[in-house]
Length: 204
Image 1 (cartoon, rainbow, N blue to C red):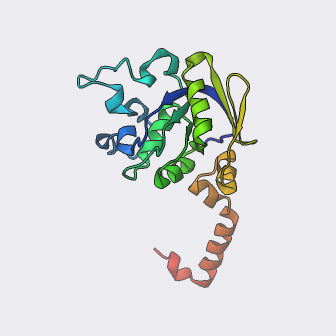
Image 2: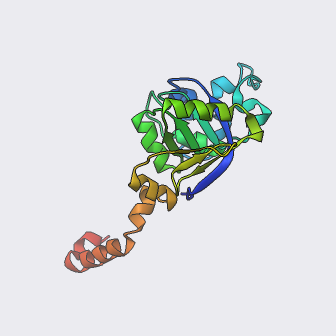
Image 3: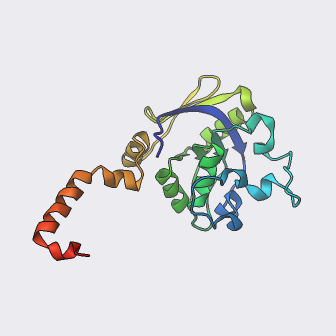
């Protein structure tokens, strides 16, 4: 998993509440177990019409936000059914940080496991960031996980809180497999002991 330390980029405003996981990545795209290739289907029903053509009024189809790295969203983002494809789609599109006042628990946890930083802020702070995001490509936002702060295009700073363990994992690029491999020497030592004490377990 790629490390997350400091991210600077355009923030796309999505002032909608209760954006569920089926809106983020519809069910017909859940057949794949690959983490790549889902970005083109992110927010599919909002981005495209029935003919498969882009809807020009959707924020990620507008020139100013096509390369957004940050999403500023309304309350209760990621609600609905549990699907890890939702953070996969965001990441594949290029979005590595989602800022909202609240997230659904499963989506929130899945983000950390896949290298996406979900940040919870107050309604007042979200309103400021939403205003910054509305400015488009000429107004970048910096998300500094090391110092836990967000810097707006005018230099204003907001601090955010995050669980220390989750912060550690993102800063070091550690998903569940990465965390396990940190104990590889102990795993190998255990297996070596098992081969001596219980050799029948390793017989073909």
